[in-house]
Length: 269
Image (cartoon, rainbow, N blue to C red; front, side, top):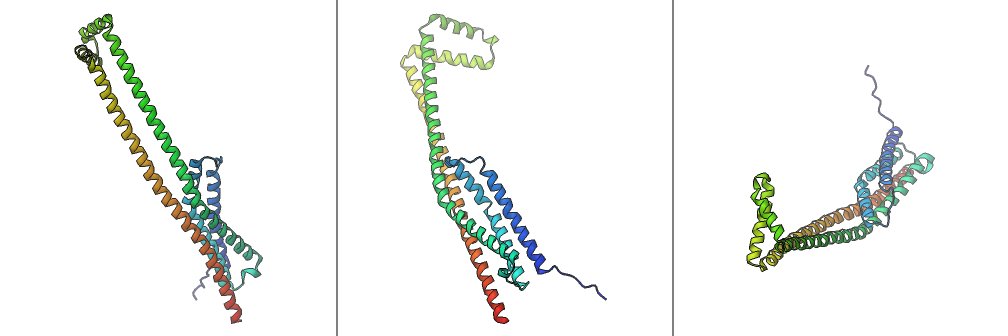
């Protein structure tokens, strides 16, 4: 005789599905609470980052809900007992429906909140980029003015000119980098001595080149920030709305399926 193969009972399968879904949801809740600590709801960047992390875990919570609803349906359809007549099954159905509606409502609200928070965060980061560029321009101007003053001081001081000449003559004792630096200074001094306006011209050329580089970096940083924020805004808001629709649809379709199954069983009796 062949040994009879035993298959798990519908109640056991239902329990496993519901427990698996519950563990997934609890894991998402724990991760979400940890990500929200310490809270800083007045910081738009913090709010945008938090919503981004929550939405990133939304698919896991949705799978957990689907497992719970499927477990409730398996217990009802295969077990033949309506959840409304089983206190434990009724509790699973009630809390899964409640959490599904809460889940859908939260993610429905997250979409406009994220759009607003990301806009404020983008404006704040843009201000920081502009402030950094302005500080770099100020530093550039200060450096150029300091160099202009140093060159002017050397030109007006014969002792400094003599010391510079002595250092160049003792170039064998200097490193190659120091020789190049001193030679550059000497070339500038000679050019300025022959043409006093050359100093102003060189300072303006250096300022123009420096400002062009700073502003190019500023524009590139703003462009990169705008692109990144736009992609993130589309991704988070669309996923949030899709998760909300999925949660509502899952709850409604499961509830209707259970009602229809219950009516069919009553009519069959």
